[in-house]
Image 1 (cartoon, one colour):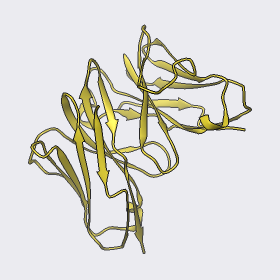
Image 2 (cartoon, each protein chain N blue to C red):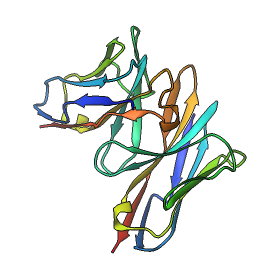
Image 3 (cartoon, rainbow over the protein chains, first blue to last red):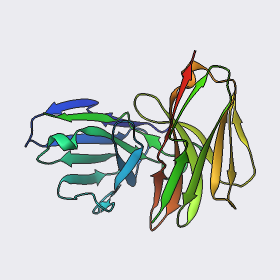
Length: 119
Length: 112
């Protein structure tokens, strides 16, 4: 089945530094990937839709200069949290779906998530 | 604005109880509704619903969609402590591109 690998699973960084999170589709090509943020005890909030070879589409209220998304290939999307601050600490998850619908009945596949802590 | 709302927000029951979780939505260009269970990390898929009135079942879990009422329910019978989790409802909608809109989630705790 479709597998999405997300790395790192956990990162601690200092305020002011940038952190890059990678999301890879391992056995399929994903023209579209999605990035979510989850606050403690809250649901997943869609941040942006990452489109291969073009600019990401950001949801209202998400700062595009703060959360840089790059989808340079059909198997890799990256989210860079720039100049991170403690309020950026959160759980970030990516998801993707095989565009040839091999897993259509199972919905989108999620990465395992990245817990970011900014100190 | 697209919206997916779940109720209740949290629920505490005892083992053996039956629970019903609700999900209602208002989205443009509805495509499907999905239920996920989230324990510690990534959500795990439970059901995808596209047609009204057809119940999907997996063990003690079942779900049904009502497109007229723009809602879905997830039933869990004979609950076990392992059912404790956040249950997420997501609606797949199209507004140029397909995307999920997640509901607020229901946090279920099953006591032994």
